[in-house]
Amino acid sequence: MIRVNKGFQGPGSVSYATTASKKLLEGEALLDCSLGVNPYGISRRVLDHLKDFDEALIHHYPKSTDKLKNVLVDYWSRVTLLDPDQVYFAQGAMGALEMINKVLIAEGTRVLGVCPQFTDYAFDVGKCGGEYACVPLNPLKNHTFEPEVFLEAVTEAVDLIYIDNPNNPTGQIMARGDIEAIVEKASRLDIPVVMDEAYGDYMTDLNSAVSLIRDYDNLLVVRSFSKAFGMAGLRVGYVVVPKSLAGVFDAVSIPFPLNSVGVYFTEFILEDRDFVRRSARRISRSKKKIIEALGKLKVMQTHDELPIMVLTAPKEDFDLYRGFLEEGVLTSPGEPYEGLSKNSVRVRVPGDLRPLLAAIEKIQSLIVE
Image (cartoon, rainbow, N blue to C red; front, top):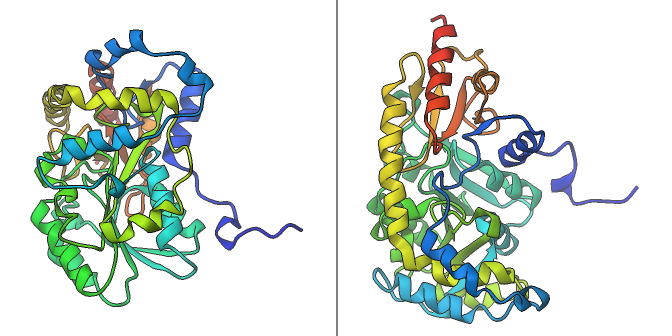
């Protein structure tokens, strides 16, 4: 029998993204409220550059990403000074996280996070031989992040800290001061901190942990153009690392981390930052309408301008994912998220609210408390 790495033995874990993609490919007429894309698409100003795209780029390997690195260095200059060699590209945020795990995780590495949060990262920790533990978001306070509680768990027994901010699946935002308190304590204990900001473009740039990167040599920040900027299909992510780790990541960065189409469009994507702000305002209006429609279903702590949130039914045996599916709405089931059960789902705000609001009304009529 061929020997495989310990982390890949057993049945493995199924990503909620894989489940959603499979459902959508089955051809069912479902309203997608599962995958974390921008419900309003992509900036028309960016798409205008399509007419100038040189098709020969597809025939050749992608050119250097140096220009794109400089675009990001210029963009972040409003909050901090970066060097191009601190930026590394990858296939989406998950690709960046896998690259980080190659560097920081070995057999027995103890990783501390919160729960619920992004499931696929925890799965990858296990594949790499690490051990993932989490501090639950306080259910008595509507699953709100409590920095003082998390700080108590940051001890010498921890080898690495992972936090996604904004939180996936709840859509709540952690304050920059709270993040810095964690990074500062971790720095004193020589613990690296990975901040996953895949949904970070929905919050202000000043709240990003990128603003702290020059002050701490234990901080790595992951970003993505898949969410707010609407470029999920192009799979463009990146990680900002401290200067002390730049050389280390040269060893794990593959020769062509991005495809030619992704490189081309990403050079223009930051030209229309207002597209994200407009999207956030529309999301806020829609999200408020969804929350106003809730009665028997409850929403966990969340931020108005984030497109994702967790809805929960009052009884733990109520299969909320199945309930929405029967009403033609695809959500992300709660069960893959540590700390959630089948009576919870993650919902992404859709472009058309009407089918979702109708489904919520029908489901709430079926719930007997």
